[in-house]
Length: 287
Ligand code: NAP
Image (cartoon, rainbow, N blue to C red; front, side, top):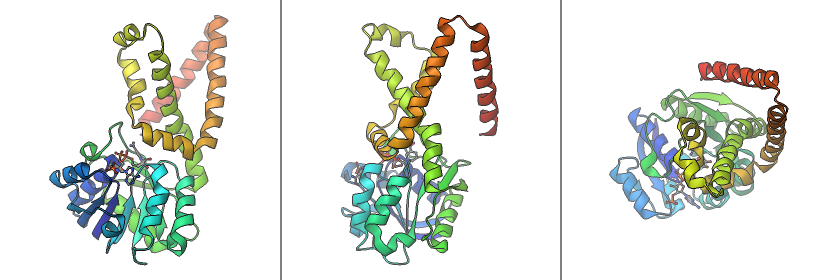
């Protein structure tokens, strides 16, 4: 049971966590911090948070668990602001989509309190943002990856693991580097493909007509291009090295497809599509 939970950044991910913990009866009081007062007032009205503060220091005062749920680019200044106020017993975690940059920011700003920091990433989300997008079942049966550091206290990790368990999540442990490599392939690259496709098509002269005839496949493939641009700008900056390498390899794969089409190589196309279909069918069966 968490007596006081502080959420820095009451958006989709932070508010879904608050709602899930409240539904599970696993939290006493939830206090939020954000820059936009209207969003926080909405959070109180919706029962996501019990109150809010206009400074990070006031928000984290007396909190047992502090969840930093802001875009990746805002993590470092948040860590810097909360450091002077938090008690040594408090546990800090984050939900950022890349871990290397967050760990570097926490290490630089938290000093010896980095032993109370448990980096985390729920593999769950939608293309919506803000407090109104949150819902209690977001993490049910979804994976949450924790990437504790060598210096992370075991009791801190156990508290964050228990918190996510209360939300119905499945916990996995990865190293920071492995997390960023895997997520670059399975999450970050697909977002780049969706953004690039919609951006490319919208630049064509007849784009109105193209979008008018867009059907289910286009809708499915491009849903994630409606995700928050700030969040994805920050993911690209944070995990750029892994991501650019994958984009280059993917370009080679597209070249192979184009070459097979140009050559009228029906066997090659059938082989490629068949392998991709069976891979996806077995993958979805496991999710
Ligand atoms: P979101 O809905 O936009 O919420 C982010 C919140 O952070 C907003 O409520 C915003 O409130 C606050 N914020 C933004 N900049 C801030 C700053 N400089 N200082 C303090 N607060 C700030 O975004 P989200 O989808 O919940 O994403 C939050 C984190 O979760 C990101 O690090 C993202 O990488 C990670 N994540 C997202 C997903 C996903 O699918 N969306 C999945 C897994 C992990 P104010 O504007 O009021 O400040």
